[in-house]
Length: 255
Length: 336
Image (cartoon, rainbow over all chains, first blue to last red; front, side, top):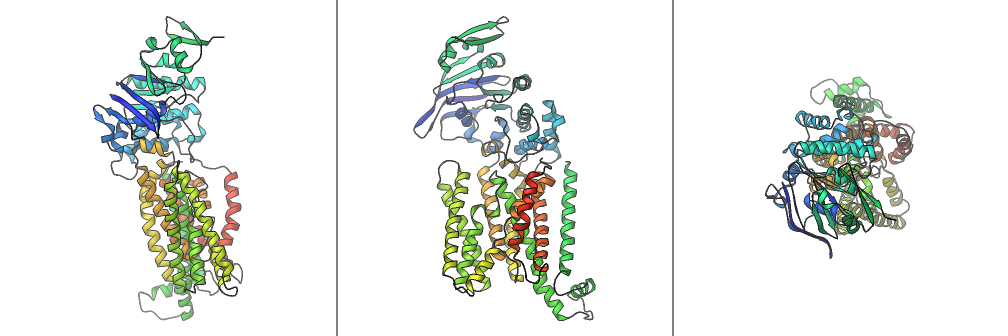
């Protein structure tokens, strides 16, 4: 379980996060919504130990992450950025192998055991065929899956994803979300930011809405997501359409 | 490509280098036959009848061998450093003189020459000025705001420009009959007149710098995918980066101080190896080290044997390196 308590953070004099508190349990998918610049990425960076100097605390299973070493933290929580082409391309197998870094415990490079971990992670997402392909030559959706495999190889059970699907086409968005749902069933905790409330409604167990650095609302999607919320978060007037026994909610811009 | 095949390629490169060294021993104005060479080497360990001239023995030990070894270690150092800089700066265009190591060395050498110092002091001055330049670059780079890597690169550009201005000024005031040609020749890069002492000095420093890089080389991969990602994977980014930069700088300074400015090796050789063996430092670094030695050895053979008058090796590396680089970047190849 990851718990964020009273987290506040400022860049210089600009206060970005103000008293953020929430928890996420194993087997739970949290979706963080908020306008550009609301503080979603900053929140994630604090939770990953990339940013320090915040007040409040982030703890995993009761242990404060600022008391953990980088390797200990890497064992617990993994970061899944948006797939981007690195300066140098690696094979997919090498890319996933990098995730095994926290398992090396003093050794200088991964051996056969780690290679197996990496291949298992690829197989889990059904992309083991890509292993010998070049990362820069596979599709965006496949790249995103490779990065998720890397996080799995890292051994962390909490995955933090910054807009994992926003640069993908519709089919790939759905494919990635499907794999994430499977991970949730296996007891992973996933916290992702999203710019798509309609998708968040379908996939998330809970939604956290951030406005101006504060938690504006949080709760189950059907409790939280309505016309009022969209108006307050994104400053647009919409009409909500519920479909299929409220299995999905759509928002249409009012003219 | 499978890892076993990459290992095989690296073994092949090592064999090629060894063959290159043996062939190079026979190249030169004084001919030495294989039998004579064998005799000279055996005579070091056992008493045998001398059937070669003392001149041949002298040439072999004091001219040819130091020169061959110098070409190998300078080539190794520049390629290794270039390879590491490219990884640390996440920039395929980085080269060993990226941060100003060469410009600093040039200033030191030029200074030593107009102060009338001997060869040994020219090497020492070049080495220390090179390190001093880089220290200055790090200090400035660390004080920049925003992205530290960009800060470091910009600081390198600025400090290089200052050092180059200093060198130009020294050339202006240098005595035109002796000092100016000597400075100009140094700037072009050459392995002429290299001594066993130079080689030993550079070898020790380059060895000290290369060992940590070889040990850290797999972790360098993780640095290239971005600082924040690397830190969330449990890599101590600052520590790995600092050790890599210090080592790469040390070996560059040592190489440049005995050879002068030899450009292109540190850029072209790592790229050539990337095309052959991929970007994984686990294989790329050893491949660059071996290929760098082989490449500079071959270029130096051309430089000292092609014409009656020796062509400075720096001119040749540029002449070969630039077109070769164009070929590399336009042609496809192994990218993973």
